[in-house]
Image (cartoon, rainbow, N blue to C red; front, side, top):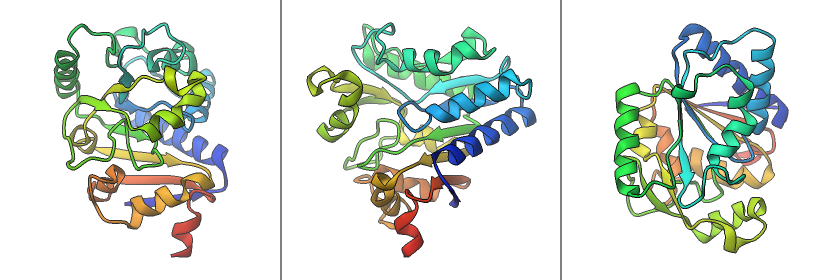
Length: 244
């Protein structure tokens, strides 16, 4: 595991965007795993600027989003489909057929999980996976569990996760209780992983991910077993590991 400590949120976002752009320059048909949430928003904005300045071409890039809420229509502003199109896809030259996001409104959710997993295997493996991290160590929506679940599956969201996401919905009652998420095996099969974290409120989480036991009770701990994983942190998020 590599750790890069940057000055602040803007710097980690810029660094991540430059790494994505460089990866596309080296492999124009890059298969890219993408997250949602608060942390990657600035990275997407930086990538849009790089694109508009003519330094990156997304026309052959293939993307797979990590997760999507179940029961939330795509047009809902809180769906990850809306998030990705509003913050990123509509601003670049990626082809519609190269964008892949789980369908949380599928009639048969279990079949949708199998379809999505098989599609990743057909198009992949994922060359570069970008991750955020939840306070309880979840990556994607892989919540603390008794086992590492390897493939794309339905995840019941913990109250802590739903509470953290309730700021987007206006109330906890409106936050979906389930999501489709890539499994940890799917994530770990990525050739390269970059995890982004920012803020003092993530310092304890990062400490456990970097130095705690490797356990499904703290899913991000498994990343220490990956052959090419880099944490890009600001000074606040790295605050506790610097003291150890």
